[in-house]
Amino acid sequence: MPVIFSTTDTDFERRFAALLAAKREDAADVGAAVSDIIDDVRARGDAALVDLTARFDRVTLSPGELRFSTDDIDAAAARVSPADAAALDLAAERIRAYHERQLPRDERWTDAAGAELGWRWTPVSAAGLYVPGGQASYPSSVLMNAIPARVAGVARLVVCVPTPGGMVNPLVMRACKIAGVDEVYRIGGAQAIAAMAWGTASIAPVDKITGPGNAYVAAAKARVFGRVGIDMIAGPSEVLVIAEGPQNPDWLALDLLAQAEHDADAQSILVTPGADLARAVSRAVDRLVPTLPRAAIAGASWRDHGAIIVTRDLAEAAALSDRIAPEHLELCVTDPEALAARCRHAGAIFMGGWTPEAAGDYVSGPNHVLPTARSARFSSGLSVIDFMKRTTLSRLTPGALAAIGPAAVTLALAEGLGAHAGSIQARLDSLNEGQTP
Image (cartoon, rainbow, N blue to C red):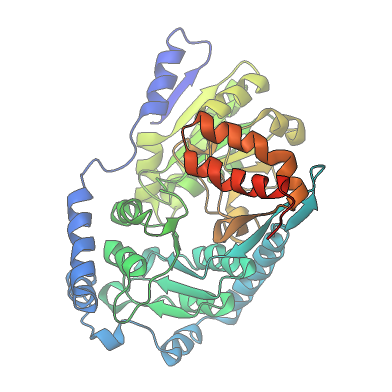
């Protein structure tokens, strides 16, 4: 049974603190193994990738077979049913339309001192996108990562997707075609991250790596950060549902289970001021779990990490939500707009009983790559801007330097940086002598 408690309980703060502090990931130390893998790929390149793929994915490849050929991709994508292909097309269209609105604007202006200032946005040159493989592969993740990169203007898109036992997911290949991916490699794990970061004879390095993965992939992304950019270090998925009556208990139960079925370490939390609704949803979850294809995973997640919290009112529910800072926040309430205004920390907010988070995973349009483990307090979900860089621009006229330069000289001298002061003062002296370059 999940944790069920109320804010009126005398030990509420202790139990709530324990909920926040609970570790939901495998405690095994993967750092040493990941370090060895990265070092191996850096030293041996393609040969390491071939050996590691045979070891972890049970696939024997030559260096020339690491990359899917165009014919391979086309053949796999052709196996997708018309209904599935149409669904992917709709999702891609909506994701693209949403992210096109995120494109930032360049700015340029002249201020009162006569200085011309501004900034410009440019895309990274190449992005590497990691996609889990086999039965756990998600074509939606291809779209959510590759489409924003393309909208940003990234010239080269690389996907690494493992094929354990030789298993290729046709939907992933179709998604790569729809999103305009340039290169697809049949490698996974920490070795794929190392290859994209450092490069091998077959795989040119990229500038930024994004996409979900297991603990080894997450650790590898942390290790290569600095060599390349990364999106985030994502933990197990999570949802917090704030609900009040009248709501359908079965709908709410399915919303909770939609996260639980991702991973046994995922977390689903219901917060409600209605004790009767809390009990009804708990019963609905118990009844629905056995009907799910991933019942064992969903059941373990709900049993070990699920929680139901009964609050005094919705204001208290919003305050608890901000302390949790969930990846996904569903507001199944009468006035979701008003409640959303009270919630500052969430990766994504789904407003109203007709807006299930699961729709956002696929077709709503906003990105489903979101901050986990309370990091929504200080970070945002994946966007077009993650694939772009802002470069500042400035141009000083002689008059502008004369107006602001003396203050810069003063500050440079105060910091003991004589060359800084001199580089400005030399120009000011030239102006004072009536000279210009």
